[in-house]
Length: 514
Image (cartoon, rainbow, N blue to C red; front, top):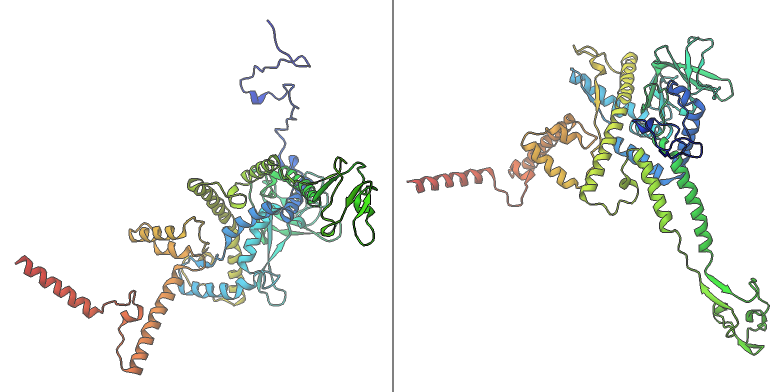
């Protein structure tokens, strides 16, 4: 019996039932099996730093990378996240909500007015995707005690021994605890503190986890730090960036070449070049039986027949189709790993309605997932602000009977992505008529209003319409019917005309029956 073997004498075919378990078949390098190693050993703090830095660099320099992250964050946050009080005492909730929107939202961040609540949430979402995680500290103004939020750069939470998998904390309130990538954890792996590095090597401050809001997308059970959205595609983006740079340089060189000149010497200046033997006035001269003359400033040349000299236009065929396909393939692979639609940020052409709806559904799912990640963090910030405001006397004590009612908050969300907004709005109106959805759902889809805001604005508008109608009637002596203040058509009938018409129709119907 004959058996095919490789250069090492090992059988080429495997007798294993699962071929994936064959780690050394001679055709490819074998992988080191480290099945029992936890993630903190497989991914060191130094590795995390490298991935986070490269991700930030590509975000700063690569449009597709930046566009995908920003687009997702804008759709997840938008002009929304207005607070909704879910407690029992609505009157107290309205006062607290007004304070949050008018006073705390614009000044919630220690950096000032440019970083309002929605802007910070947007930056939080971008940071999670760009650097891996977002870390915020609950604090107060030193002068007034005003509740504020301080964002800590992800790279500032760490440890000076960047090569260690993990170390033990020495001294201080967390003595003996384990620190991994700047996160101090207990024996169960739960964070109890975060190490904030100082400006000088060796300087640090351990901040209790009670004062920290740590936001990241966990992919592994034993994860302590988040990984950037496109961490699985860093190598693809490095290939894209390098290939793009080389192609750009080649195209710049090609763009600088307009005409190719062939001559018998191959030199830049042929001593027999007719242009080199013109007289000072540029008049025609005789050289070896050839009459030459410069025309149009030297852009047109005449050559002696059979001299071997000629001019040709340089044709630039870059970028090639192969290069374009390579770029597209790499970008598709990267965005597939990020779970973000390719057509949203790169070449949306060539897709039909079915594909577009499928892509939008993928984007909706990703946006909803991001909102579910931001929601607990946003609620904790608002809960902290309200709690401090009550403690400082800015807000009154909560009078409701539901325990912890002052901590019950939700948020409005931005409108969902749609292909045909008009069609979707029409469908929502039909769903509302049949009772499938409520007015709350329709109103809060705008993102910046609650159902209470809607009805209050509507009631104020109706009251204002009636008030102005009475004032003008008293001023002019003319009676103004309420229907005239909101006519849907220019020839809309009055209620008296409608009643008269209905009465006539009824009498006519009775006569026909008789």
